[in-house]
Amino acid sequence: MKEKIEHLIREIESFRADTEAQMEDFRLKYLSKKGMIPSLFGEFRNVPNEQKREVGVLLNTLKTKAQEQIERFKAQLDEKEESSEGNIDLTRPANWSNAGSRHPLSIVRNEIIDIFGRIGFTVAEGPEIEDDFHNFTALNFPEEHPARDMQDTFFIEKDPDIALRTHTSSVQVRTMENSKPPIRMIFPGRVFRNEAISARAHCIFHQVEGLYVDENVSFADLKQTLLYFAKEMFGENTDIRLRPSYFPFTEPSAEMDVSCMICGGKGCNICKYTGWVEILGCGMVDPNVLESCGIDPQKYSGFAFGMGIERITMLKYQINDLRLFFENDLRFLKQFEASY
Image (cartoon, rainbow, N blue to C red; front, side, top):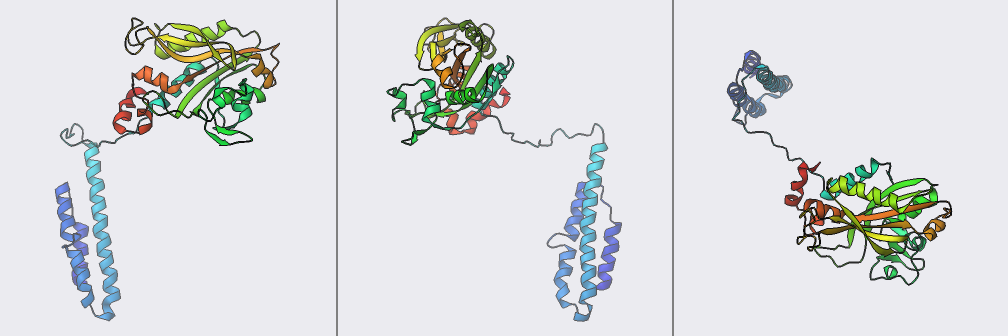
């Protein structure tokens, strides 16, 4: 058996394979389950005990030599294929790799951050679990305001009140507490409200709020900032309008509409045939809010705005069911692979 193994070692060392078919023949002859080397390992049990050590070493050497030859053949064939010019087999199947895609909410969130970043707004984030002062009191919410009711807010503790934040305005408060004007920041994040889940509403959604505090900030500055945002997000032909509204933390307050990007302002079912679509709320920061955060309202003024990322995304991509953002259906998400 020793002589047989030594003969096979010499045979393997002298073997040459120039094609994949020859390499496969080599593998089948020597290394397959019915090949010569496994067969010799099966016969090893019959070798006399005094020869087992020597024959065992030779058997392992034989197997190693065969495996090394296979690797050498593969490397030579790969090198030969790479060096051959114009010898590409276009009928070979491609190696597809299924790349992931960003979530549409992430795409739009990043776009909003980028738009405001170009005019000097930086990003700040804060905790999703908030106390009453930062979520309500500092923002000029009176004690009897309905937003404090448990029907609207997810309370975690009572006395003192601890809740899942209902807006990212709480991050504005924390920023004003810890920073001195001028302040020019946006606050993206996830918020929570006790809403019935439907095609138009959810108990979890995402906001981007903005805050600018400095000397001599006016409503005209707010309007120009939001007009710039609307044109960058929805197109140069986009118009805006501001309608009087009410928010506890801004005075005066307004709702902002953009001209419907579907019908161009002519009227359709998306804009309810008005030609306008509401996208955000805004206003001048109430002096009481500035004072609560340690900023002198006699010296400084500011504006704030807030928008839902889901609403902007639905308008931008003409999505009619908000629940699609939370279902993680790959058929839906793959549509946004080319959006970034």
